[in-house]
Amino acid sequence: MLTSSYTHQFKYALSNDIPFSVKAGGMSNKNSVEGGLIINLSGFHGITVNASKNTVTLQSGVIGSQLVEACFEKGFCVGN
Image (cartoon, helix red, strand yellow):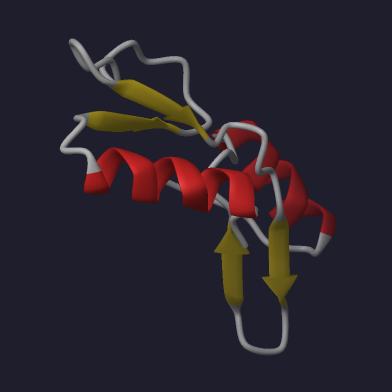
């Protein structure tokens, strides 16, 4: 769940017509925006593996190696 700080940033940008981009877990520079805000969500690393439903829920900052590790710990394999 987003904290109120992040919610405020999104609302501020939207209500003031400020362009924004969201940085998640990766290292790409493609999330830059000229004259706008970058909202960094890379600190959100939550992963929930539900083995009984065969589902995984990720937060926005999760990177591939974290996903693989979390799934492996629960006995699942991640392929591409």
